[in-house]
Image 1 (cartoon, helix red, strand yellow):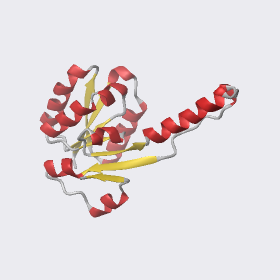
Image 2 (cartoon, one colour):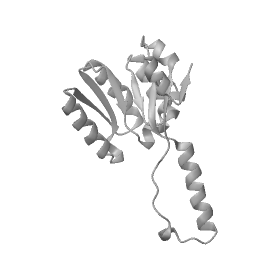
Image 3 (cartoon, rainbow, N blue to C red):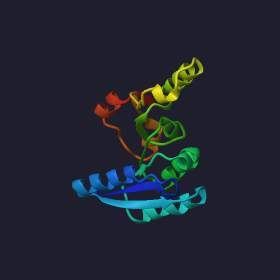
Length: 164
């Protein structure tokens, strides 16, 4: 792999993930092509630019707007024949290829437990900060087939869920 695209909503202010991707690509000798969007109407141009720049895959950074537009993002990745990796399984449910990230369902359950503690009188300032502990990998084999990709058995074995 010589070039990877990074789809990022610059309006969200997410900069750490972008810096991490830039650093990793530099260490690996892979060209990183940024596709910056600010609104949903920028997505078509972003994917066209990634395809034109010859990227072989796309990383879609976690962001509220990109999450809300997950159906469209997955469709554009399919149309441009670009394998994409996402931070949430919902993107894979919408037709994306692969996700690896924190389980939203687990995070919501943990947040609900905090709400219960607060409703029972706990002071929010006294509650410890918690971080995600459950991460999941989901692979969409239907999308892989449409892209002409064969997912290695070792990767399939590591997946928490495989959509066929």
